[in-house]
Image 1 (cartoon, rainbow, N blue to C red):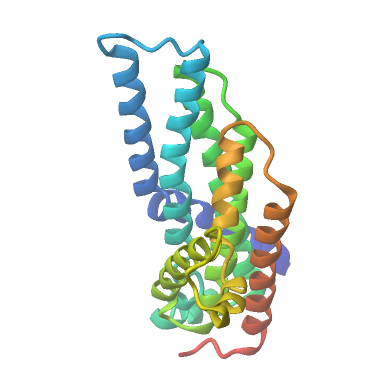
Image 2 (image 1 turned 120 degrees about the horizontal axis):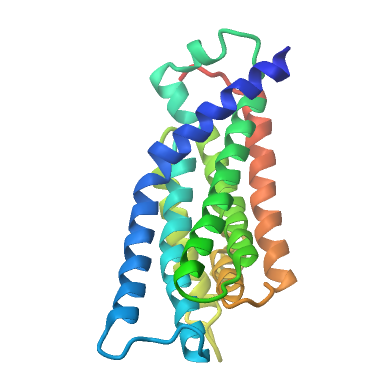
Length: 250
């Protein structure tokens, strides 16, 4: 009975993602991708998408659009995924029936992630209709990796504080800057004592590298994939354990 009651929430969770979380990022991605394809196809020297140059340009358009859509949609979706209900008192309504708290938010997380992957595949298919063959499966894998890391980290922060959105953005920016600096060769400008701390920050650089390879139709490195998935999964598990123990009323 509890399981069937949980599943009834799924359609509302999917609708919430489509209308409130992903709508603005989707419009931005469609506008950028659509305008780029239109100008390339209708310009003074129209691009032939069937050529090697055309295929390379189509993959560039895909990367530009999805590099905006995936992170932005993921940040918006995971922001306040559980903290918002606590802050606004929605928990009294949501859990007035026998619904397990961790299971409800895990289902929300899974529905949001599944919708992000599906939309990534749909966008790539749509772009392919107007250009040339594109790595649809690769784009969907890039969406899954983005959600695993951004969604897992955001899920954890949301169980801890109502400032989860700001902390997630700050952690992401800090990770991107410090990890890029740590990877500089021949010598990183960061002090030695900071390098071990950088290693435990979210692997934003690994995610970017994996997505770039997938958009180009290549396989993502197993090391990058394992790092991203392992980090995101660890955050998700830790967040779930916290939800089992913490008070719903803040």
